[in-house]
Length: 389
Image (cartoon, rainbow, N blue to C red):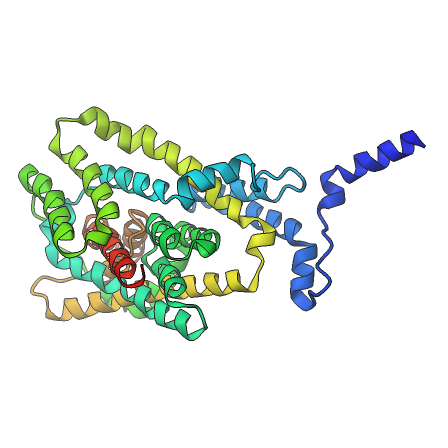
């Protein structure tokens, strides 16, 4: 009898015996089956995300840690993402506190060249136009019944800026943090899938072929003054955005001043790599079936996709308008880089431009609105925090 009980106990301690869970008595319909088969479903989803990251190379630095974190979170019994699990500890320390977004912004600032924006300041308008996705989705979320802080947190996904989404949500709607973090980083990683169809639908072949003239050379003095100027303006007009803008401009100043190369190199390499690993795993921990497979999460994912799509579309449309009135030709595709997924969106713009015209190198031109989008999303975050906080 003891042997049989031991074998039964061993069986109940295996993953196979615990993959299928018993739904709550009052749950019916689709939600009942999602509760029963949630872990196997999410494990399949995570394997698919790994496939996209490894085979298709869709932003693997983001997608692979997130997908692997999701796998760990859906292992039955192990409780890796639950209270006391190591992923939960990392999540609480870095994401729930809002610390990791600021660290990421330091690294992004150190890795980013603001030169294209300084050389062609009017492309900042494209970064501003892309923020339309944030505020349009905010009103749509309000219409669907979310309150103002929740709607603001969902809308910020439209900036395609994971750190900003986490920072805002941790302040306004921490109960939605998991779903919004997953949505924001998933859409950032899937930029190469989501953006090209929108860009092609809104532009003609001739517009995509437009070649832009080479940007002027930006001096070192300009590159040093620019982050200080941006931070000063933020201090004066929108202090709520200063944590994000301050982290971004510190990283950029460390890179451009040329006298603290050790710090700059660390921010660009070891520091941001470590934070990316920890952030990706902890975001992936929120792919846990019990938290992710809910109707509310589905609404957030749909609204986040709409926000990102609206932002891309408005950037392209505004690029078309600017091209009509500009003395120098402007390829409307660069408007799609107005979202702050840097430099992913700029690379996608360059790829679509080369498909239409093999001599059409748009990468540096797209970096202008792309950098403006980073600043714009941080400013939008400051506005939302000042209104809703």
